[in-house]
Length: 307
Image (cartoon, rainbow, N blue to C red; front, side, top):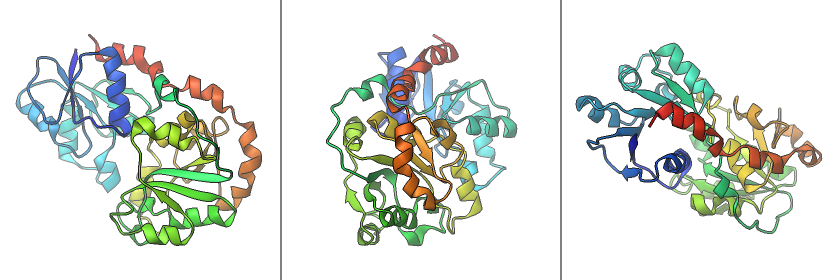
């Protein structure tokens, strides 16, 4: 039985996976540091080092590879990543592409993909009044000067500038941007910047906008860094769906095909922005909101983890 989750918080994959696990294990204990346990710990991987503790104490663990550190860095020979993954009892992935890469690179233990979609309970909110022709983005944003760095795909300035050019207002619930000193340049082109809200309040907050943006900047971004983005299955593939608004994707990676012509629209070029209005009515948003809930994975996850 799973008895431990390391470092939960109120956002992203931890929020979604912890809540899902709690439906299987209502007494699930969450702790902030590795500790010995009589059950099987569920821990996060990527660049975290929790696995060292459990290997040292010979405690089998379930690894959540919510991100692949070597993929982001372009490092195909990462001995610690190999030890972490090959030493796990089982591995959970949010992306089929992540799973395929790891299976090709390492001797991967039994694994399961669970997408970071929303919960049934996330749909229980009262929508806010709509703001016409409004685009919202919720997540990491960086200044334009950061585009050549390891997080340059979050330098969205030129993309949002084009939406504004075509008559859309742009609303950002931006993390990282203020700390990086980039608020002014986004405000200068017309973006409105808000304090990020908690996961519990997020969907009601997003519901007031017309569309949500999912994508990445490619201009001047290192190839390795940009290629990493194309293999993700981020929260935003479902985040706007849960809020009841269409997703608009541009350079958003393989994950765009999850929502294209279903609850979202893919732009081949930013010159296609004017087509958004006429394409929105073709989407089946409400049907997919009900169909895409993370609880659809409960049976498979319970069988995968075992009791």
